[in-house]
Length: 391
Image (cartoon, rainbow, N blue to C red; front, side, top):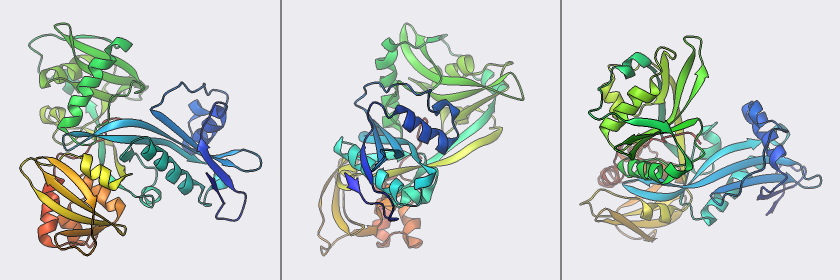
């Protein structure tokens, strides 16, 4: 795909990254995120992985890379079902190419590649909301990371049966993936297991069966020898989860604090007397790469039947919901019945349950009647959408 530079300078080509691009991509990422671990000369050859899509913008003439983006294909839990998704990361544009439309063109190209690979939605942690919103992404939820006192974790209830904790091996991947998949259908926003999750990884066994998994790292701290940072933690049941927090994560007295994602209503939040201080409360975003496909793939509340016509950026789609499932058909803009008019970015926020349709209608963010707004609130209700881990 060839694109002219809107600023009138050199043109650029959008293409898949290939062998030999590693150093140039590492340089762009290091420049964008001030990350020396990605500086040129340290980059390793990319392993073959069909689930990873790397896209770049190459300047015509000299072949210099102007921008890069990486997507990892995965499944994401929505309404009790797993929807084909892509996780977007590593979006970087060279300083000399900014403001020329290169980033927007690359993002459109990356989204098209993910859609062609079967993804219906895309999840990302934004550096700037405005840039991604222009590409159809809306706020989906928050990522509340708290500093938790280690002594509070050590005071959690002891399990009736002691767990055995050990370093994870490749042979544990299927068992861990099953734990993560079960979590995904209990909530919204969770991604499939990714063996590349950062940090040291451990599994916990009970009676010889894997019942938990944790990825963590130790970061230098001024308050103690180090701080434990939990990238992800999942367990088969409440007893196993509390045991992992108590036995594996709390490194008291070497670490006075643990930094971990603590969603509203989570088991750990329920058991802790208080969270000492928030260290991060960023938002994450969702985009619907295929509006009809994403609406049809999502789960809905059982016992609710509905028909709603959406006008999304001028394109009409009708959603039929029954028995917890949805199906879609092209909508007739002139048809009678409930209708909702909104942008693709705002539909993504409604889809995630982050944007309340009743409040949004009152604010003029979407256009519909009060009854339909209430119906949408029912259809997309659920636990707060949480992106379980960075990627």
